[in-house]
Length: 424
Image 1 (spheres, rainbow, N blue to C red):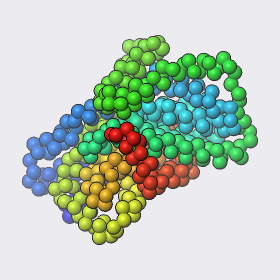
Image 2: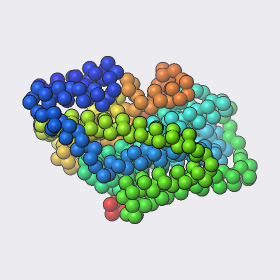
Image 3: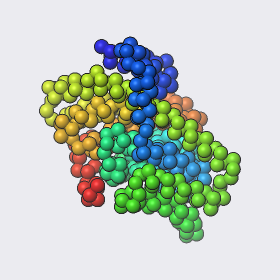
Image 4: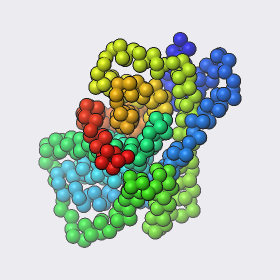
């Protein structure tokens, strides 16, 4: 009963548009007071959730993404992708996806991708005859590649909460991220067959050479980050620090950094990192309450009585997580749901790394659905597009995303293949 009241209180505060961290923290502190738990215990439990060396990678990867946004790296990736795909029909659709794949190796965040890349790709597409609805829908959907493809901020949070190897989770997410890109590319191909006015243009030889030269620096970032992590040369936290230094050096080399830009980068990084830290702390306290009320045990008993099939369990989890993702920010949802669902998943024989990838993809799809739909709001604001138009444009792309999610659910080898090959 106490748990139901806490959850109900959180939902009411979310509906009243209270910031997520405080919507979680208020009912939790009320619970602690009503059950005679000390204020010191509340503060210690919340603080312990963010007292983690692996979580130090989060602000560093945020710094990488913010710096890449402010130094024109996304523009260079766009020019390179346009050279590769711009010659085919509806080529800017493939360019949109390609830019998100390239930028994902540095950002690790859907909101960073959609704020930086979406602001560039949507005007480029609409100016060349693509409908605004299609342009914003594809930009929103392709931004989900960022938090799935390593380095991924949600993966770092999951690895910390679930006590699994961050490197293994990074490796496991590569194939799913590429499958998402492939699913979106297939959707673009099917749509583009009827768009005869969107013929491509063959680039000039000098244009190709210039785009390749301009992208060599940014392409060094994924080699440094992913190569260092997967080879064991760096821990994810160390790789984040090296990556941040690398993109800052690139910015100075491109002469796109000055004191004013550096200040904006520092403020944006600190603001985003602080908001995630507060959400993590509040969610950690909620996780402690759920454990104290034995919610994981009760849920495990219910699900084991309901089904003995791991696939059926995972499909039920998919539905639940997508619904949770529509109302909760992914970081908060991870910290709240993983301690509850992961022990149950293990009892069903599900690998924790496989479960982590499925969880992250689910919650990312939730970013595209109202009422929260963080990606929709950011993209609508960045491109000055009404929310109704953004959602209508995004809806068709939910189909390939859900198809990839179901494929990952029923075929765990797609997720676990690369970690097994790399012996992570």
